Image (cartoon, rainbow, N blue to C red; front, top):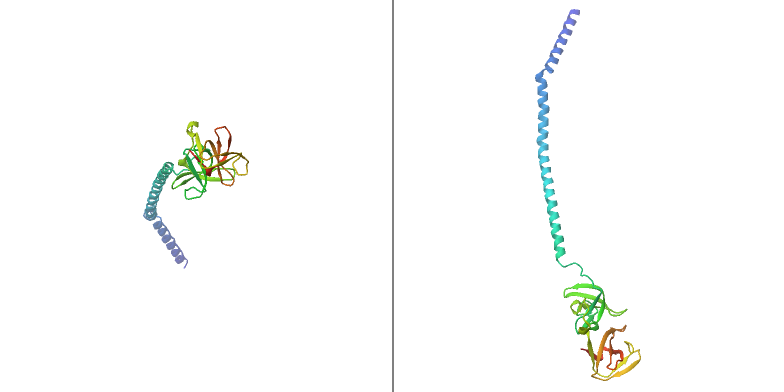
Length: 230
């Protein structure tokens, strides 16, 4: 009986050793390595196309960024040369025509609030680019503001000879100390009299007055509706 047990144990040990020898043979190890390598190759076949696509996308993004930069430069260049920038606002403008009208808005369809004459200076407050051209917002008095077309004025003051004008009266005119009927009368000017024109002024009532001088050297103010600047 004891011999039988020993024989069985010996056979078991022999089979175990044999099996271990088979499991750890070079052929078995090579097969395992081949399986691992095949797995790595398969992963690479999946990753490589993705990497290729990512590189392609990076290249396209770089190209698009360069295109956007160039287009932005073109847009900036077009803006610079389009003339849409805000015009420079002069401080003062001078009337360069015999007479011009000043409107309540930047168009001739607005109400006329004053008339100015050659050589008159106007302080500019603002500018506006309308479809008809550039307009200046000017100060007529401390309380009255209006718009004058840029083509009727100049930023350069005319010479004294060019701006020298006269006023011819339409009828008898009261010459006053100031530009309002509230001022005292200092003389009566007959119809058809030629006076030296000095300047114009629009009072707080919106009335336009001429500052004139008679041939005898008396200076005063007359309402503009009774005379014409020439």
